[in-house]
Length: 147
Image 1 (cartoon, rainbow, N blue to C red):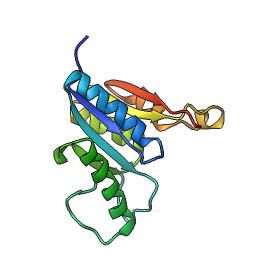
Image 2 (image 1 turned 90 degrees about the horizontal axis):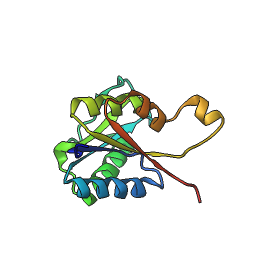
Image 3 (image 1 turned 120 degrees about the vertical axis):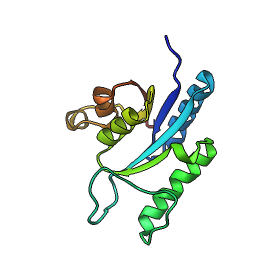
Image 4 (image 1 turned 180 degrees about the vertical axis):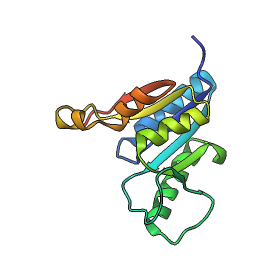
């Protein structure tokens, strides 16, 4: 088995994000890999913005919700010691943007949280499930148990 060299952490800023991030960091340390991070904006309105738009992290905007999301990504990235050149925020559909970035950046492993929901949530699909089926690399879905 080849060692992972580039690991992509797909983060959603949920209450479980810290747990998923720590699992990704453990893998990075184990394989001496580079850690990349992506956050896909799909939960805040982005007026007149097409899907697939990469949000510049080093430019200020007048949009408070966007700046709050950028600050969250910066804080997590700084805690995990992720280089600014390996941080992405994209407006779009999570599964598509995550898998597309993984291909572009030659990612070996995508780490994503999964709530393991049943019933209607499974029929509607989840980000983890979509990434698993569409990624060209390995995917590690960290099972998140609700307490």
